[in-house]
Length: 67
Image 1 (tube, rainbow, N blue to C red):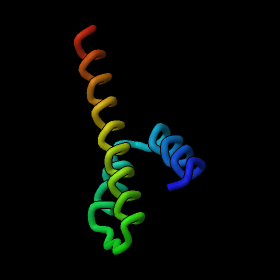
Image 2: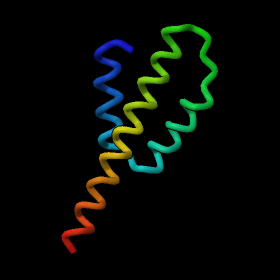
Image 3: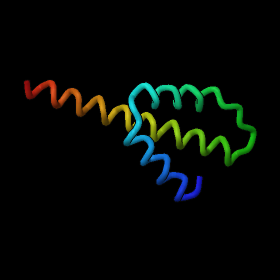
Image 4: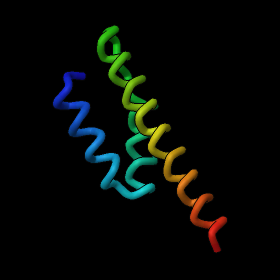
């Protein structure tokens, strides 16, 4: 992925609902990619998705602890 594509994907991740992110994650996992570059892009997308989901979970846990 080029830098602009990565930036756009990160912006989408930040604005997307958890359901949208999970759908995109499933699509990426099912993607049939044959090139080395394509596989690297899918791995990067999955890593960014996982990081976003973990960050959201951490925020939920922190906010829940303040109650």
